Length: 210
Image (cartoon, rainbow, N blue to C red; front, side, top):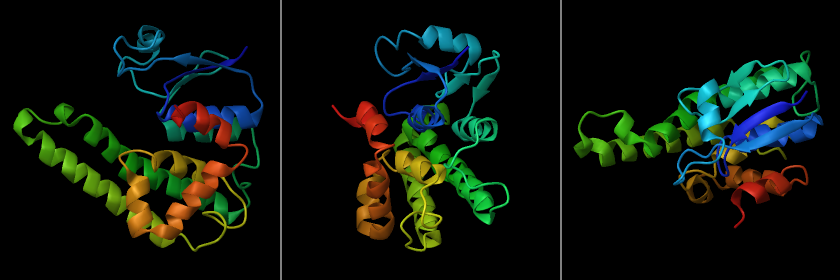
């Protein structure tokens, strides 16, 4: 039996796809793009497992439904240990999870608001203001991440971990790469370094090239 990943190009499924590939486990990728017209061919199927139609959604070999990108990534790392997370005895493991949680709750959440401001307002007149506020919140989150980056080759030291890939994916949304290049150049350089890793580049090319 294999994992089944419901995702879309340029979405949060990119890092899950990356990790599944690195773990060497069998998986099937299904296009469940919700924002295309018509939606991806597997979108209706996705909603049977996740009525909100959120990406990524992963179906484990035993039929277990996993949602929320951070939860999916960390569950995979617990079930299939790899070098992409520090070992449990390493203090960097806690920092890896800490900064992924920070990014998920402070940056990723703001992306969802900026993408769909109409979901949060009863009156459409405030959508532009809400979008602007969410983008500002993203920038504040990235500034905080940048202050924690010590300038090592990777975010937690000499080795890249899943937190690096997670951040690199997230930084591609809402022109945050351009913001980081101006406001936090050291972190912008790290994001580009992650893009070029031979393990990451093929997945990124499928999601963002063309």
